[in-house]
Image 1 (cartoon, rainbow, N blue to C red):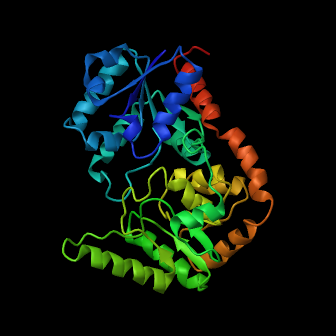
Image 2: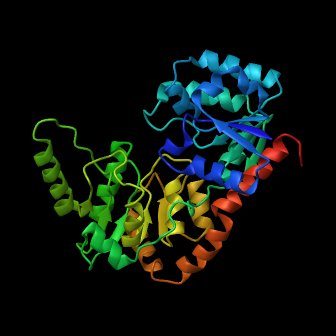
Image 3: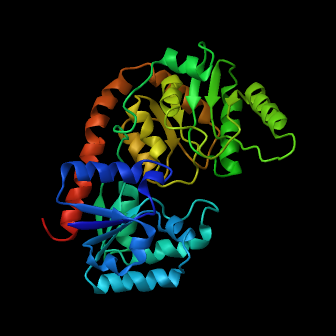
Length: 353
């Protein structure tokens, strides 16, 4: 079985999602040949594959010299050659202005799919109606347990990050994509109104002034720290390295997902690997996932009670729920388990099962 993954370099994709699944399949199923690369996708060799599997087509095309008409023609030729077109539904549409001009790429891919893989029931139900001719398969997001294998203690984490030991830490990971996400966190800070509760938001704001940049960065970091108890780095993109990431989770008491427009989020899964309560928006696949594990959710159209929801999560973090959940989550969402489910899906798509 030959599968081509549509990505220039899965090991430099911004997150471990694709390459960890590739490694998981190759380790357990040597009969599956997996390839990737921009040049390979546009070459005639693509017609020799059983499956061409898309991830984030808008990003792939946003960095490509080919037009969306070229993409459509290429996919039509693949289907004529008997190649199965597959896509993982990471997004319903581009996030805010991130390759928004390539939204048509997503529609082209989804509308030509033989099968669409979903990370949750919400998008699966939605797409079953929108694309009834496609096969829809549920393969949940996995934990990056093969990447982050060591979990530092709370004391080690606080020392590494130079954080006070007598604070309750709320971690907000990931890029802040719009002003409304920053307003959400500031609103949360105002409702909590407690000096002993700190919001760790490494990517909260970016400093882009060229002149006096260092001084301005320090000034703004100090302002958000003193005014709102928000600790940030002053950088929005790739603010936290893979080496540092476990320390942030080690220092966190709970994790808060600051998204208001979202379908899936790896930030909803990562806290499970580190045994943390997650608070997230009640939308897309995220809301049902968190409710399944009895974690709090907040309505995206009403921020008036977000402080009390977070305080409830802080209390939950001290209960047995988290550790009990973690054992089950590691079994259900391990990289090995999900890689096997994806492999089985491939076999199903090409009719081997």
